[in-house]
Image (cartoon, rainbow, N blue to C red; front, side):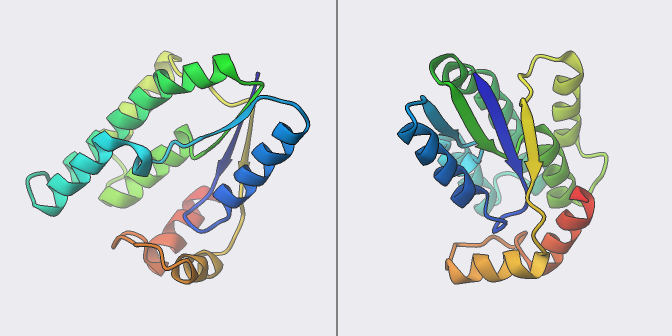
Length: 169
């Protein structure tokens, strides 16, 4: 099994690239899958997000729940994918989650980042065989987000994308 991860901000082209690789590998006869680390696909995350919108949870608590959901996802479903495929290709892994936690909370010492860091130190996570950063300028990624007419959250502003780009560099 080969595990490949593409890192980069929203709009960098991760999904487009991953979907094309999975399709090509599948056509070649490999068992390939796209592992979505995005919490958008996680029912738990949707409930947490609704709780934040209703102000039952703070944004910091939101990010903590997000990272706990990500770690649970990475330690359970991801292992199943690895065991059942020749190639598992995903978006955003450990580094991306730590970086985004720091950005979304505006706190380099945020608790959610510490959760990810501690799990990384324990080595309980399966690390990718290959990891790539899609180096796309913040202006281009923001234009792509707008063209797709995605529901964008307040954190997906041009300013946030510029901060993420600097941190990834």
